[in-house]
Image (cartoon, rainbow, N blue to C red):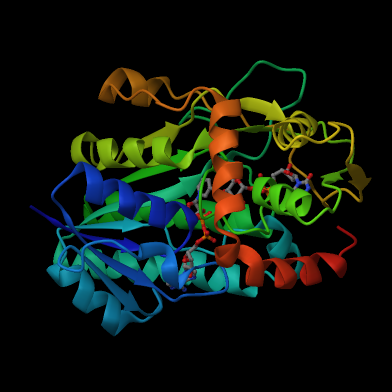
Length: 332
Ligand code: NAD
Ligand code: DAU
C-alpha cells in the first residue's frame, strides 16, 4: 500500500480520481486543496476516514508542501486554476497557482525524491483546423492560446526541465475535455444542464462549430492510475477517448436528453481567441500501457451526468448564482 498526495482532490477531476483510487486500489490518499470557489467540501464525503485525509492549504506554501511530499510515495498534481473564461478576466491567479504552485511542488518532490505525476491539458498544443483530420500527439509543438493554457504549458515545461536537469522521476499526461459528476457549473456541459433545469435557454458561444474531444472523468482516472503505476519516467502520455463533438451537437444532445426542443438555445458572443478544435491521438497510451476507455457511449454518459445534476441540486445551487453573475459581466 502506498500514500498518494493528490493536489486539487476536492475539485472536479481530482475528486473523481480520489473516488476511483479508493474503489480500485488499496492506496491511502492525502488531498491537498485550497478549497477555492471551484472546489466542494462535500466532494470527499462518505469516503473512509482511515484512507483519505483532507489538508486545506495552498500548493505554493513551500513548508506545507515539503512536509506532505516527504511522507508521500507519489504526488499526483491536479490543483490548478482551470477556467479559460476566468483567465481572460483576471490571469493573475493562473500564473500564481499553475506556475508558481507547480514549481513549489516540484522543488518539494526533488528534495524528497518523490515520484511525481503532472496532470495537464490538450490545450497546451493550441488548436487544430475544423476541416483537418489531424490529432494532437506528444510530438505536437506547444502553441497555447489563452492565459489558462499558457500557464499550463509553462507548468509542463517546468516538469520537463526538472526531469532533465535534476533527474526527477516524473510523468505528464495531457487530457482532453472531461465530463461527469461534480464539475463546476461554470463549465459548458454542467452550465447548460443546470440552465435547462432552471428553465433558462442554453448559451452557445459564436456559431457553435468549435469541437471538443469529450472523455468521461472515470476514464481519465483509469488512465492516470495506469501511467502512475506503469508509465516510463520522463514520458508524456496523451489521454483521449475519440469523443469529438462540436458544441452545437452537445447542446442539442443535452436538450434532447432533457425532453426539450433541441433547437431551444441562443447564440451569444464568442470567446476571444476561442480555440477551434481539439482532438487527441491516444495510441501511445493504448499501445504502450494497454489502456482503453470504458465510457465510449457519450449519450449514455451524458444521461448519467444529467441525472447526477438533477439529484444533487444542493451541491450546485449556490455555485450557480455566482457563476451566472460572472457571466453577466462578459455578455456570455
Ligand atoms: P477544478 O477547477 O474543478 O478544480 C481545481 C481544484 O484545485 C479545486 O479543488 C481548487 O480548490 C484546487 N486549487 C486551486 N488552486 C489551488 C491552490 N493554489 N492550492 C491548492 N489547491 C488549489 O479543476 P478540474 O477541471 O478538475 O481540473 C483539474 C486538473 O485537470 C487541472 O490541472 C486541469 O488543468 C486539468 N485538466 C482539466 C480538464 C477538464 O476538462 N476540466 C481536461 C484536461 C486537464
Ligand atoms: O481541453 C481540456 C480543457 O477543457 C481543460 O484544460 C479546461 O480546464 C477545461 O475547462 C476545458 O476547457 P474548454 O474551454 O474547452 O471548456 P469549457 O467548458 O469552458 O467550454 C467548452 C466549449 O464550450 C468551448 O468551446 C466554449 C464553449 N462554451 C462554453 C460555455 C461555458 C459555450 O459555447 N457556451 C458556454 O456557456
